[in-house]
Length: 476
Image (cartoon, rainbow, N blue to C red; front, side):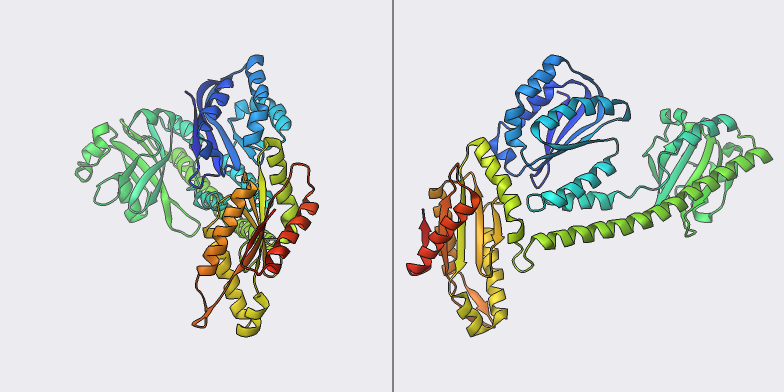
């Protein structure tokens, strides 16, 4: 099957990896197989459809009808999802047309890309702005930071005309790092030889042409290695490459980046004009490295700005002390969960809780003690709820917990478990034990109930728990 489903380590990103020729209906089959295990979709929040290795798509009206007929079922799974599609230039219009109507039908945010780096930046920007609490951005940021290209990839197009002009079989751009030389680019005919892209050699006592250039930081010309005893053990000779000419390529800092070189089975002929071409090629490559260095500096600063933006955005949505969401973004997030619950006909419950006599803790032990109690309390809550439950710090010592796909009875069990855990937990401040208990109001929101009316009802349940003596759970 040309379509594979790959789930990210943190479980919130599903990638459809598409290779070769495929039918669009196979996407539905792969999707169905993946979600045959209901646990797979628990935290799923965004999707990548990677067509970068696809050769062609065979689709018909029947295929698209199959997808449309499955739209309702897919919408249930992906109601929070944003979709990024990675495709080859030659196929981008086909995918845009194919997915455009479908995405609009489902209400998805989607975009088609030809470069993975652009796709990841788009995902990062969209995820951070809307799905901050439901997805971990670290994997995308880490991927962005790891994308350290050497700087001269995709310049292989200069090597074919260079090899033709010099009448040689092999033309290479190599990078040097950690005593290893690696082939970054080659000319077309070199792909059939030992110097394929990615091939590498150690530069420690190798007696290679490459090591000589790196060690002495100088150009090297060998008309015929068989005539020079120095090169009798050269690793290129078994492949018949007895003639060599190479120049070191330098970074803007003056360090050696690598080598541009030509190799051949027959002696390479040189004259002044060819020398100028070869040195001019090296100058062009060094200029490209200078451009990359400037670009990396700019990119680094942009990355720092982006990271700061994400940090500030997260701070604006989250309470700095507890790490929970603050009250400002409650409506947006709760509306999304409420819509999903009603569309999928599933239960949705809330727990409203208040730390008992919190003012007494502050008055007796000081506000620093109160802060430590809030931190410890928040840690206990996080450890004892599901990863997809959502918590808001509602007020000073009040917290609201949303439990998707949970009825009132199960929510009451969760609240009672939290109540018991907090009551038995040890809260210490300045080596003194601080007794902490919590009161809870619990209810399931009904299908036609407005959120504001529900919150009033939930607040009354919490008030009843406090009136009844605190350290209690009161449910509807």
